[in-house]
Length: 376
Image 1 (cartoon, rainbow, N blue to C red):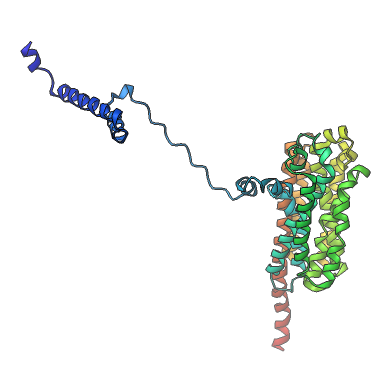
Image 2 (cartoon, rainbow, N blue to C red):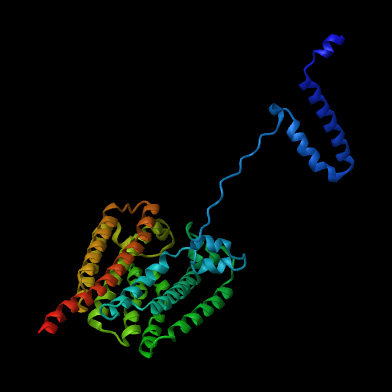
C-alpha cells in the first residue's frame, strides 16, 4: 500500500490539494458574500473542462444607424406617435416634395453659379413641415379608412395612439412653423406659397370624388417648382416655371400611380378611387405617356433658360430610369411597387445634379464668347 502511495503522480496530489482549498473557500463564501465572487472564479479555473460551462461568444454589435426610421424609434415614447404621424420615418415622400423645389432653385441661379444653399436648406425645412402637415390632414380625413387597410391600420390615428384633437393641435404647430419659413421669402413668394394651402387641405378628399386624385397630388407636390424660382428671382418666369411644373405633375402621376397599385385590392373594398383602378392593365401604357410628357416639359424648361449639355444628359438619364421602372414594374406585387416608387428619389437627384452642372457650364461658354471680342 505504501509503495502504491509513493508511486502516485505528484500532479494528482496537487489537484486534490487545490480541490480541498477550493471547497474551503466555497464554504467561506457561503457565510461571507464578499468572498463569493473570487471563490466562483477559482472554481471556474479548476473545474474539469468537460463539465465547465461553455463561454457564450459575444453577439455581433449592432451597427450604428442614422436613418430616419432609427431616429424615430430612438425618440421618447410620447413623441414617437407624432413623428410617425408626420411620416418622419418614411422620408421618400419628403424627398419627392423637396426635389421640384431644388430643381427650380437650381435653374434660377445666376449663370456659372451653384444654387443658393441657404435657400435650399430653407426649402428643405419647409418640405419636412409641409409634408408632415399634409400627412396629418390625410390621416385625419382617412382615419376610418385606414383601420380597414392592413398597411395603414398601424398609423397613430387609426390605431388610437393619439386623438383627433391632439392631431389637430399638432397640425397647427406644423403649419405655424411652415409659415415662419414662408415669411423668410419675398412678398411674391409668400402670396404664391399661401395659395397652395387649398390644394394641401383638399387633396385627401379627392380619392372619394375622382379616379384622378394623383393629378391633384401632382398639382400640390410640385408647387415648389414655381416657388423656388420666385424665391430667387422675385417672380416667376412662366416660360421656364410652367413647363417645369407640368413636368413635375407628370412625374407625380407616374410614381403615385405605381404607389397606388399597392392598395388597389383594399381600395376596391372600401370604395376609394385612384388612377391604379382607372388604368388597370393599361397602367404601363399610361405611365409611358406621362413619362414622355415629363421629358418634353423638362426639355422646354431647359431651352427657355439656356441650359447646357450636362442638363440634357441628365434628362436622358431620367428618361432611361423611368423606362426601366415601367418595363420591369409588376403591378400585382406590392413589394415591387414600393421599390419602384422609392427609386424615384434617384430620378429627382439625377435631374438636380444635371441642373447644377449645366448651370456651371454656362460660365465656360460665356468666356469662350468673350475671348475673341477681347482679342480684337
